[in-house]
Image (cartoon, rainbow, N blue to C red; front, top):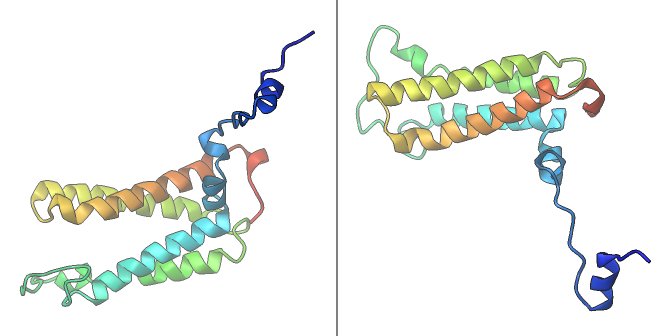
Length: 159
């Protein structure tokens, strides 16, 4: 007769061990990897970026320490570029299968944000405390987009 450890554990009043899920099978990660949800997360992150540029004088998101940006192209630095990206991500979330190529734009944009923050840290323009959250979130979004782009075609979920 074969031994069954699970039945013995149940008979002794001990809970049977739960199977360990692989990281890709975790329900939260599966939810976040859904194309529509991912596009809405990207749009939300862009809206936060636009709010950061809008409220520069409050010190909530950005603190200019009473100084102003100066230079011939300083106005370009706070140009609310995130607004059209947020609109694009929201528009594409209506039919993520049809607009699947937008994920390439999202990957490039998040990687550019990471490299820009690291550059400004190295140049002394920003402190480490100013880039931890943006780089962490951009890295997490990049990872989700990367996983979406390079998962096998059979595994891709509908929107």
